Picture 1 (cartoon, rainbow, N blue to C red):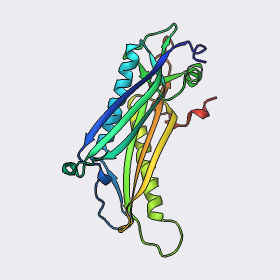
Picture 2: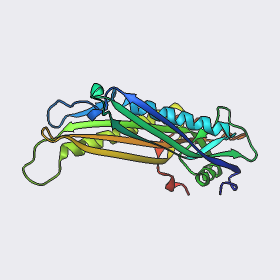
Picture 3: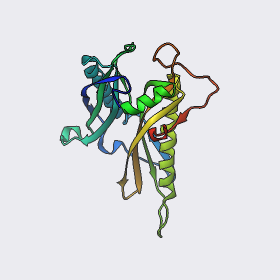
Picture 4: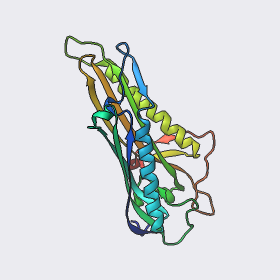
Length: 245
């Protein structure tokens, strides 16, 4: 399928970043009334920075191979609290970006270096046949928390359900903002990871980290393989890649 798409495989590439953060342990306290939903910005910045640097290093590794595209790109991260008593609230975030570097057999060379995409070479071929091309990766990490109301009987923790819905809403808004910034008509190859935990049993405080990645796409120009901005009136569609026929 890679050859059928007019691409030449070059090899696996990766980028990593180990980032120190001043506040990792629990990602900060939560104080508030039951039902309140909190979104953390400052503590999650270490996650965002480490992921961006890992992705940048993946692109550099692909460029060294002469790549035009990095298919199947995945970016993951892991937080670790510090064991140093002098760094009680600190820790590190380790991010890793992986993908497969490919180059055009014949065709236009990339103007801005290798473009990482979450989709496979086969799905990239489907996009081109449909008149679309990747406009860039979109990626966001959201952290939310809430203090749940006490329950005496079994049943839904509606406050925690609301926290989860809010996290997804924040993530979708961020993904849409990034996609529109590059003139995208849609986002495909969407994947996500989530982690929820009971941060404080005494206060019944729950926290959640949600990461969403995808590939923004836009219509091709007639004379080359570069994406162009769609009609301003068209809607932005976010879908998993399996929806591509």
